[in-house]
Length: 206
Ligand code: MN3
Image 1 (cartoon, rainbow, N blue to C red):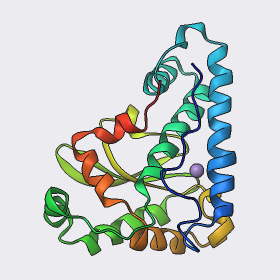
Image 2 (spheres, rainbow, N blue to C red; image 1 turned 180 degrees about the vertical axis):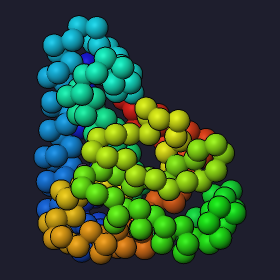
Image 3 (cartoon, rainbow, N blue to C red; image 1 turned 180 degrees about the horizontal axis):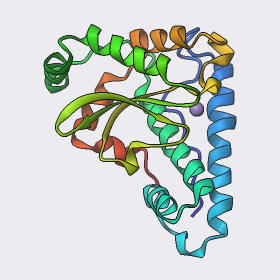
């Protein structure tokens, strides 16, 4: 079975000016779709990968040094995860997640400030991540298509900092894009569910 472009988990008009319909049309409908199409084309040339799950394709492609396949397949996964990190309804963390945030960063405000610093400071294309590593919350960023799946990281939250993620709505102002999403559009329920690793499988497909 070829991989598919997952549906967005919300109506693409529901974010108003935070994320425009035009951004979803390009980012989901063209960029994410292109990664799906390219991955399917590359897999068609590698009989050994037919029937493999997306996460298996990602790890196998990296092990084989097939960077074209790794980059496209990892970008499918990263984008599927990213869409689920967003919600048009403003949320705040609660429960175990809130406790971990307070213990690790002192407050949500501190976490968001550090996340913004990482996302804005990341040079060129990539992804800012909130992960669990060694049992603790940690903020990091990865370049290009690199993904927590091939590192010892449990992914909780990501923001896409490729220019295609923000250029339509925010032009070159990456800090404004990051601020807007962190303040208004993070699906903290999804982040909390990822504490037990569900997020990895929910962005996977086979
Ligand atoms: Mn993107």
